Image (cartoon, rainbow, N blue to C red; front, side, top):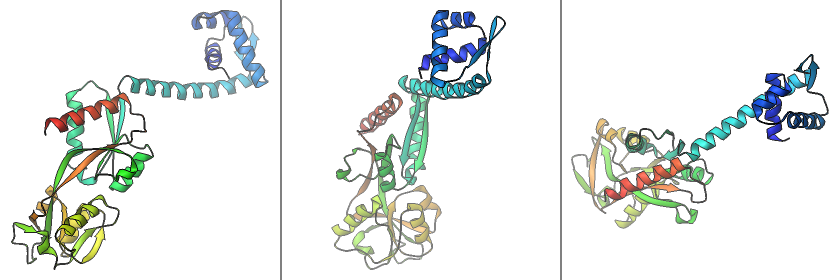
Amino acid sequence: MNLDHLRYFVRLAEVRHYTRAAEQLGISQPSLSHAINQIEAELGVPLFEKSGRNTTLTRFGEEFLECAEHSLSILDAGIETLQRYGRGEGVVRLGFLRTLGINYIPQLTSDFLKADPDCNVQFSFHSGLSSELLEDLIQRKYDFVFCSEPDPALGLNAVAVDSQELVVIVPKDHPLAERESISLAETLPYPAVCFAEGSGLRKIVDRMYDAVGGKPASVVETEEDEVIAGLVSSGFGTAVVPYMDMLEKLEVSVLKITDPPYSRNFFMVQNDAAFLTSAAQRFRSFVLGRTFSNK
């Protein structure tokens, strides 16, 4: 069904007069009559009937008007949304590690909006594990993901944008608790709380322990940094985690790692196969400009 004809029908249903409706639509009356005749022929029922000098809807017309108005309302809303994207407005969809949701992502997005207060850009925020976030990025659920470095085999575009210091945490009553710094080799005799397989940090921590020639016995594994910190605080073992302000509030000692030296990079990742709106492109430029100006 011709979309213009559908709009003609709705206007005629509102005005109830062919001549006035045609004038408002900027078309000739014969063109309007032709459009209505085509719709009625396609539907197989009359939509209008004469009432003196005016035109009224039949019961079929009343029913079809409700459908037409609803359909055009949805279509117009979609058109407006896409036009907003074209003007550089709209929603930028972000996925990120939970630890980045405490400071980094809120500060980054706030600074972007402050730099251009009239940009009419909004953000949607979603946190999760690196593996889950990257899978959703491939499925085009996000514009950008901030997480551990993705496997190159995924074919995603990843740029290191910042880093987190990794530290050893131990319970306050642990034999190592009085130390300020430590080699990972010194933690090998003690049980450890570890990141689960599939976590981006699991591979990083495993490589660090490989560099010192061994791994501690794992007593429990989980995915979340905060959960690991809580388990260490409760005496389950030692752990290697990104430094977080919350560590200072727990019953743990935080030890700087002297060997092997390592800072955990995290990355802004995008799927180059997915279309980026103007708003998302502007945000990407802002993040990269901020990242490289600080280096």
